[in-house]
Image (cartoon, rainbow, N blue to C red; front, side, top):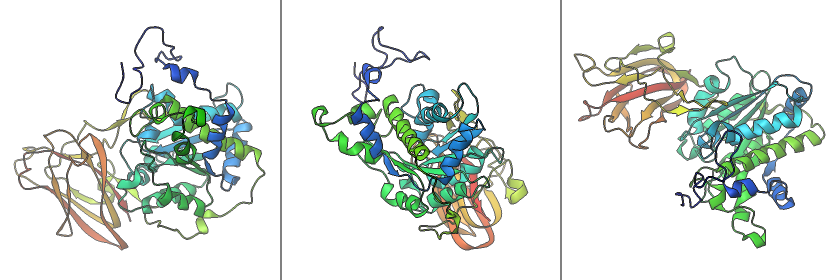
Length: 427
């Protein structure tokens, strides 16, 4: 029986091998040779740039000394682990974290910690807002290594790289000076945004790993011509890797770790003194939601007085359970108040991003957003049509000023629902 991707159904038959947690393993997955010279050559091609090695060698040195090291991943659905089964143990993030432990940490130690913060369908425009909460855990975590993976998600970044570069700089600017690694995944149609994003890495001399560089050329070759893996074997669907694909991504990161460990220490560079090549306007962006909103702004929630609990979920870190995203929200439910009242936010800021909930439910409708009395945007929760976090840029100004944001249901949608998940603001 064939699945949608053309692969053999992994649950077919009773004699198929299983991994230690009981998930059926395909014969291709079981037989794939990760040690062949051709495979190692393919992995070598993934190293787009070793970058300045000072920060990464520092993290590796800490691990070798038995000191605590935290390795963090932020990105989209591929970082979440989509296509891998089980998602919490077969994602590229978990595999490369395991690689790092085996390569550098003392045997049987618990000194290396994993932070995995991938959210499906979201660009760096949302990632830069989530960074403090989902990676730094509101200041309780200082990762030693941060891997950023948005190369196939950032087509939806309205800032066209400004949020991406801001996220890179936000990570680099942490007091403990973590190593920042840029990872470029690829879609089945050979597409990613490496041409837009890699110049950021070259500009700051960062380590970069490219799955496009490793895979696309060999996808064109038959097995007898040097092809190692087909698209149907690497991809679970048109976007996400299979278990083997996730393992290949992890091996590419491990190759970077290995090369860095074996090379001489570079001279330290002060990356933060360089002028941005796209922009850094969102480095200081902060999340405003129902939990902290009253401490930051004047908010009149009006008929947006409920809290939505049907939210996008993601398996964080090595968890096998989903964590609801943006639980501190404002939800409009028709008839919630005797009089229909819109949501009003009085906030002093220069830049503002609205985060709202996409949904495939007919119960959700479109909202109109006014900024300082002018209709600026309309937020359609069916634009993507699945339960998911949507970031929308409302304005981006150079000067900080007082602003009034008003959110009302569009004409004819008053009997529908709408959820404001939060805002990202630059003060």
